[in-house]
Image 1 (cartoon, one colour):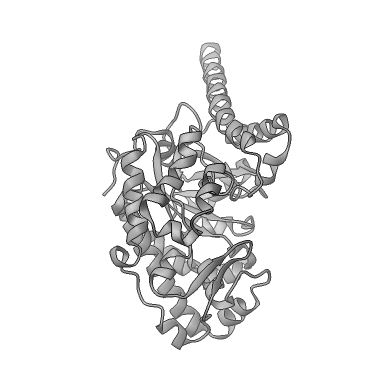
Image 2 (spheres, one colour):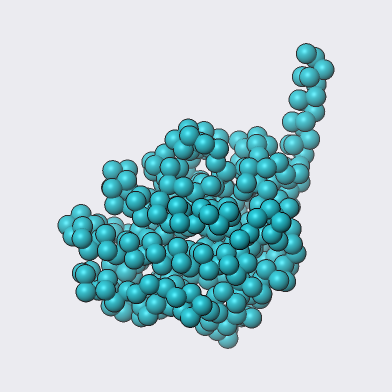
Length: 370
């Protein structure tokens, strides 16, 4: 079981994720391993995304590519949230510029019955071997993150059969066939838990649960139809002792509910000011929480001085408080200028260290005045 002596424990990411002070704000990006890098595009000339994920050495290499290029504080495993479902036999494809496409959508109890539990060392063995390689090759102070799709987001793909804008079939099943919905969500919660546990056992220092599309729900529907299953995942993982990031987009209205689900770090998108959101989630949870975010990914397309200004605004809202991990409000967009990505990493390290120095000086001055 990872603890404070595990690889990465003394590094900035894990210290921040545990609410401990750091010399600078740690930074990593969702989708940092992948399409914004020319070296990744070369890999894709030979293999598809799913093929990469089934080749541990190649998957590990892609995960490490951004770490060699930039002083990022955490490596997120290259992959896709659909990998555990493919592992248990769901026939699917990741279609370029479309997303996951399911051969036989699940819309009844018979379909749920076909969805068996995950046996990680059998079903996702290449993914776990890639985690082991990355943890072995990455410097000890840089953390390794495993991730999984949350039950609602996975269910939306399985029910719709492909990405959707309105989630009509998903909501119809959720509201009109509660027995099917409970069976499906319960199975998906177990799969996510089994997958994340296996990632930690393989060497991941922290985990992130992606509920990318849960923002499509009302608060009432989230609490009734999603929260019980999300809480089950975090409760089952809590004993592992690793930071657990809970992330969704378009979730400003859901933050108070999500904060009570059991994660230790709340991922914030760019639609809500970081300082306001941090106060909200800690008040709702009734306990200290870390926060992750929350620069708008589109801001990285602006001139570099504007990018720095936006990043500094995020840092000033965090105000040097222990517990902040700098990230985007979602993943890197495909055409993001690489020079801006690289600059943000350096800028966050430099500016956050500078702001900490300013805060220490102010504190000392106040103490002398008293």
